Length: 128
Image (cartoon, rainbow, N blue to C red; front, side, top):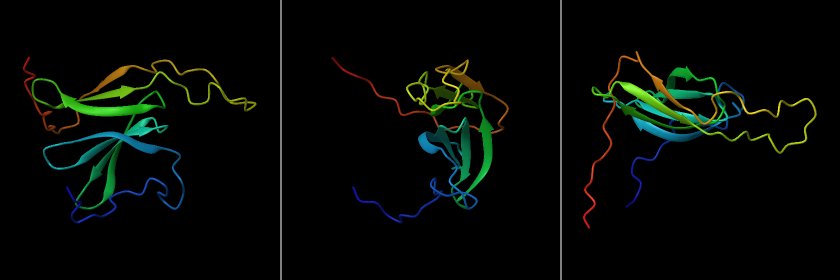
């Protein structure tokens, strides 16, 4: 298909006049149409109001490499966040840089109390 009404919602190269040092990775949306974007090298998930094209919430996590997000739970009101067990700087030889992988890297996190419901994932049946 073709893109229609193409526009930039958030420029990850510049925010608040500076480079934030992270990039968007996996994403999902809630029933209100807000996007939840995992931030690789950012220790956070951004909630983006698509209509206003602005970040309305940052959900901080204790690990740097956030990879993806999905709503789940019986009411689709829990946000599940995956992270990578990779430390980008582990092979770096930069003096003074902490080369250890932070505790919890590679974990699956469950975020509750957001007050929103997500969209369910598409379902399919794989036939033999």
